[in-house]
Length: 316
Ligand SMILES: CC(C)(COP(=O)(O)OP(=O)(O)OC[C@H]1O[C@@H](n2cnc3c(N)ncnc32)[C@H](O)[C@@H]1OP(=O)(O)O)[C@@H](O)C(=O)NCCC(=O)NCCS
Image (tube, rainbow, N blue to C red; front, top):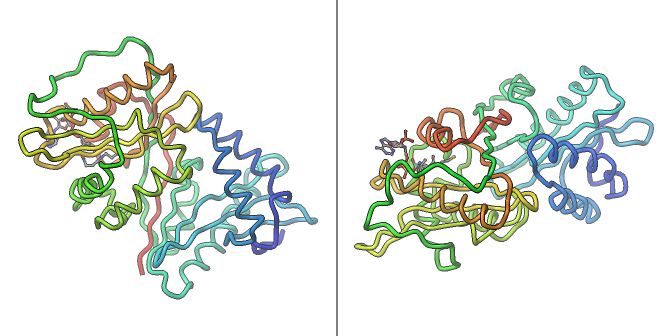
């Protein structure tokens, strides 16, 4: 088995591997990964996607790619085919691909931070590889809630001075401020450093709202909480469509001084109600295991555990 630069290969070489991966996303996470796979294949054809492939007798058995975002490198995805290999051999190829990618990123001039969230890979599978290279590990949970017509009553009414509005373009800048304030000293701003600054939060929003990397942004099931007396936005929930009938919450947060009043719960209920009215069948999200407050809220609203994966972070 040889590890070669991904940029030597075109979409035709990767297509059957991607099709296998698409099937895994579909069955484990109810996530239609086809648009992301198509994007990866388009990048492969432009020969601009940095990464590695595992090759044997001229055939690709696995790949791993990463992207550079200024001083940060992000491992975007890694997949090794299930069919031919035994579990041990497959794991060995996965580890090799990751090692090559990690070393390349850590040695890239100007890169001071590397992040990886390997969503379809079970937590623990690559802990040794990343921790051995100095990464911190964050266990992350993938939760899902089936959508049915009948849903429990809210635990508290929405406070009378709060209104919930559907997302509009005018919410962009205020949402970046809410995100930055909401995640101050929060574990998730270690996992994703974009949350630490307003410009970073704007980049995060831009990725979610304008690009189809994490599903397709769904404005009608995304909401903003508005504090009427001060005429300010104090909470935001963003939802994307990851399958024709599955919504995925990519962001929910409220300003610290407004927490514990049911606003987070009502934002989630608004999103749920909108998706239910459009006959979606499921709503999912991811949450860091140590984010107990959010996790307790999701569990109380009926979200169940689907899968645990790892987020890894390295800083020089
Ligand atoms: C998670 C979050 C959106 C919840 O928003 P919220 O407006 O506080 O939501 P609610 O008031 O509906 O529920 C929050 C829960 O925290 C409890 N709580 C208690 N004290 C609290 C306090 N000082 N501040 C916040 N919540 C408190 C609430 O009672 C409620 O518990 P319950 O579910 O057992 O009833 C909010 O805490 C937040 O923005 N956190 C930072 C960002 C984050 O973690 N987002 C989720 C990422 S997956």
